[in-house]
Image 1: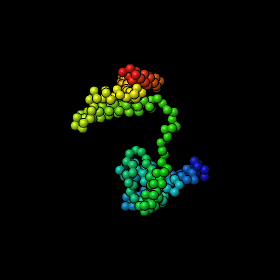
Image 2: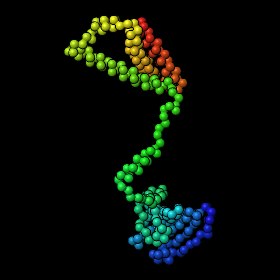
Image 3: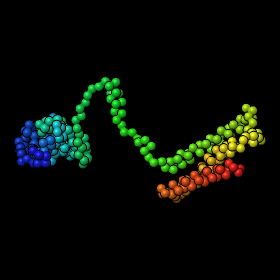
Image 4: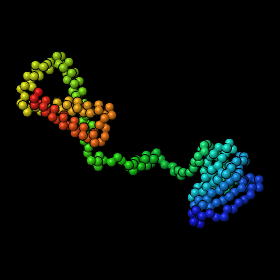
Length: 251
């Protein structure tokens, strides 16, 4: 019979016996699916289960009962065979106690050792999806500025604490970190070394300062569009390079 075709319903009138536990209407929905509409049935303790309008659905090799238990609560129970479902089976557990139907399915189990279980889990991990490599994305200026803002902040704060601690312990350790000693030592360097050192120290300061203004603008809800973020980002880069170069050459 084709799926979705209906055969002529057959009924069996309830005669009150435990074996014939209710009127039954069998409707064939297809070769794999059958539906049984049950009016009344009994459980294993021979108590009546009032399944008003309840039904048993067969899908493949599995059968499922849906209806109301004696408390009038909607529930569903998986059963292994239609005859057991139509005559005597255990009182349905409260699989679902609200108005929604819930389908349960019997799962096949297999006993394995602990080592085999660990190997199975390890094999399953190899099939997990992984995040795509960053190389598939087109680089954006916002990526580098976000990372550089954190790096320059760490350099400035870390350098401040390191130099401050060294300056405090310098008299004890015999280090010469006073202003006159450092000025004399720095003055003896070649011009290229002086400019490179000042540029290295100036750029983190200028970049973090200008980019901090950019972040303050975001905090006020301004320059938040993608275009504005890119424009302000390149503006910060330009201002940082120019200002740090001016400080390195003319300070």
